[in-house]
Image 1: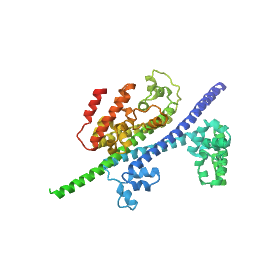
Image 2: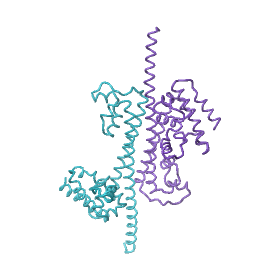
Image 3: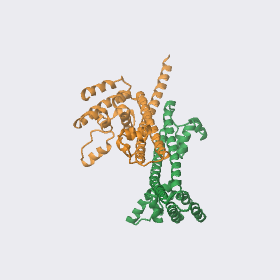
Image 4: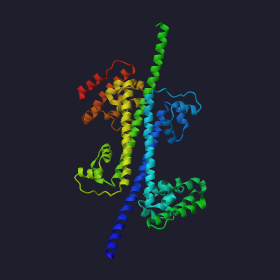
Length: 243
Length: 243
């Protein structure tokens, strides 16, 4: 292959890499936002389903706090079984016709389908981030990682901003309240949902968030400049310190 | 059948009728609220889908205003056909991988399923209202009728309140603004979506709303006291006057 052809090839590859990378940032932003919207829709509809189903089986709805479990079990178990599991012999719910109960069960099915779509979107997010920013993915997970990338606007910007900015993405409201009224400054935004922060005691959360943001910042730089994989190492360092 | 047995039977029937009627008011309230929630969820997700799909086929999204048609046609037609229909040879959209496009199409499928659930809820609403308040149903249709019944709290109350109250159900905010600031009083609330009001000129809407509310009030009384069907007659009177 001569010099000219090589140059052409490299140019084409680079252009294509640029085009692909731009799209991936957009795809990640769209996928995480879609996932959040689907999630919110499923939760709103589950609240509605609860209110409706409580006409029929109020004790069961009160007993099952978790929204996802509630919907699943409405579909799995008839009312008699729900009551038996709770050790009850009768219900305060109305004796609705089967046809009326079926309507609420159909709503439950629609909610279940939304949850499945949500899970599909999450695994898609995982795939796109694996090809776009594998190191950020390892450290932050698909949901938090995608939110940080969305706030930054692109992987490029996520690689450029200070770690302290990453630490506070998602806490803009609290930050401006702090600047305006002198209220306590926020210690974390989207990072609050990270397993390491969930595990940390209240007084350590700020410290963990700062360390995590530092590592994510490094990971974003490595991802953007296509460096050697470093995510696992960074993650182990964090876990050794706070895990 | 002796007197005693007859009395027992009548008592049982009445009790059962009362229980059934209470449930139906609740069922109507739940069904209309579920329908509204599902509708809102479908619209939110369609806005999200548009934003996402515009990365790929922006001209098509701009060309199809109607949300429902947009979702349907995303699923029916590949991008080349969408463009051909618009008389375009190329798109400003990115050349996404098929796998990436499929993700947005799966979201479109989820939205389509929600719309189907919405339609199912509407036809259920229609069935319950047909057994509970057939005359109100004829005059107001399932959606407006159910909203009025929900605002009233029960068919009983809908039969008792003044027609002017029915006229303003759904316009509470404007009413209180009127009372507080002396702004113009509202002329209609939920009734604004009725075909007769849609047809009426701006200056007639108040008059039509008042007449419609009068007739709905009569229909609600007949429904509550189980009188002879009167909905069609009332409807024809309205149509003769305003249709």
